[in-house]
Length: 332
Image (cartoon, one colour):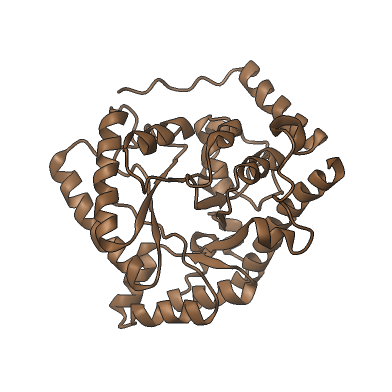
């Protein structure tokens, strides 16, 4: 189905701003009702509700090899690491043992809840799609060998303006991709890409996941991409704990306008205008114990020491979570 471009109006923006303001001012109970009493504990609350992961794009500019990325994540205090397939391939090409990489993560106490791949599983052309599925199979095998369990499934190949994609057909293609993953032991997560012609909206990704009819179907949402694509964060409140296993954290500034935002504008969580009470409360109410993965592409951060960026990022992630928890305590 062809996609109608999103028209941003002053009324839609004011509604978003109003909802964000209401959530921030009234705490997490106003929009979502009272959170279950067992949602937040009194000790180690930031760890009991959410865990934190380093997506290695955050330090891409520092050009660290995979093993150094793993050590960086562990030394910075993260619970997991979300590597990119390209770095896994470089490790193998240089003679590194992927099983040893997995063992290193295990020894350091790091999970690998997700990895970032770019297979063309969704495209209309059957020849390209077949090649995409073979690439997905190879990428999933790499993820499995390092001990990973999931991989991103963005709409690669279907992002250009004017590309017509039938979402029900996409759902069938996603089901095929999930079956490939079942054979290997790695689950593909439909990823929202806000700049794309297709799957730019949270609802589009949800449709593909639901209509796949597959028990492994799940999403990979992203704070920046949800906003960039024009969806409202209120949609997260409809997604149960089985829908999201990894969630990309980042923030965005008030300026430039949404249409002009790019990946390079992503900033640390809490340094921008994202409505964190609304986002995190929606996850918590639905008992999403997902991994919160810091994914940034900010060239200014790439100029800094990688450890400084990683540690600052984790502190920022923990801070926004703690702020939401404090708002909950104040209203409970």
